[in-house]
Length: 156
Image (cartoon, rainbow, N blue to C red; front, top):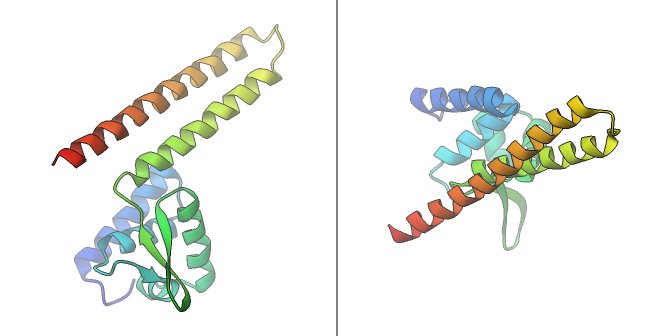
């Protein structure tokens, strides 16, 4: 970690890295990058600034920001007349959107599995069906939670 970050901020960054690794299977570097973007007073940071803050190579930062972009936790920002890439943390609901995307993938996977089964695969069909139904339930409920969150936020 960069010495420009206070001890408390470094602790937060490392705790975020560990939490996202355990909770979401994200490499620790992804958690570090997201944490640095969250606690930065700058609106966005360049790849070079991220490299300095998390003490990582260009390749490592580049790989992780692409992953974080893909799952919706980081957004790429462009500046007129500047060819550098800049990044900012996505909105407060980014984790929920990432979870919804993950749930949608599991729904598709269960449907693929169900199509692969034969009529005699009763137990397997029941297991896949239960996971499928649970994931569809979560998808509906998470979407409803996000909608309520946005209404609450707009009202405050």
